[in-house]
Length: 166
Image (cartoon, rainbow, N blue to C red; front, side):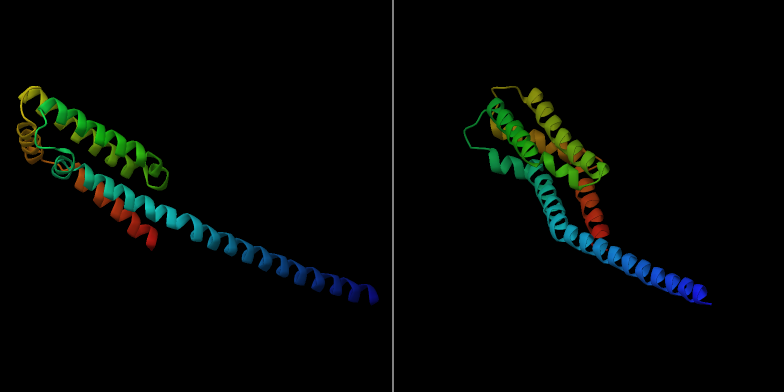
């Protein structure tokens, strides 16, 4: 009989200890998740913000307005526009680790598309044309485009952010 009581006591103690350790592990996991949210999520939120801001700054109208100085030639403006895009892209390249591959590819494709418009417009107007003439050609190329990659990139980033918030 005492062997049965000892066996039952052992089983009860085992179950209590097991439940205690399982609960302790669950609490530790919850604490890790909570700490991750406190540190990682603000960085991720900042990445979405920076990438949306980057895409907006890359739009030809914003880019030209920011970079163009009245007396620039087409060649000078082309170099400055491409430099501004490259520098901003390099500044934000690390943000890709916080967003999906699809969103990052849209951001990178937007950058490439705008750069291509600049090169194409510059080849049409020639290096000695005015910066104003180059600007007009770039904006015309943008207006002819059926698909607006910058809008797709921003929509993708916003959608991801909404999903992360839920």
